[in-house]
Image (cartoon, rainbow, N blue to C red):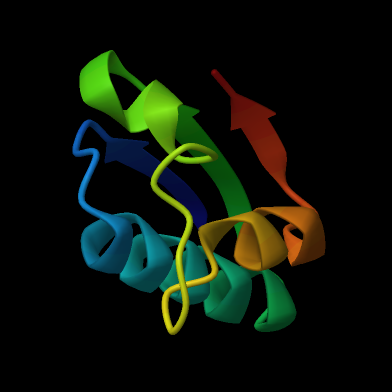
Length: 66
């Protein structure tokens, strides 16, 4: 299945959970694309424990657009 996820929030927990879900889809052999739009492009700035968004992005093996 082809899945597209759009993350437009700068909330660390929201971006973290969306990327975790994207990683799960990839592991289940789905074709996943993630688009960071609007405030979503600030994911690196809002990266904070326990919501390590950057680690989830680094694990992601699909198409990633900022």
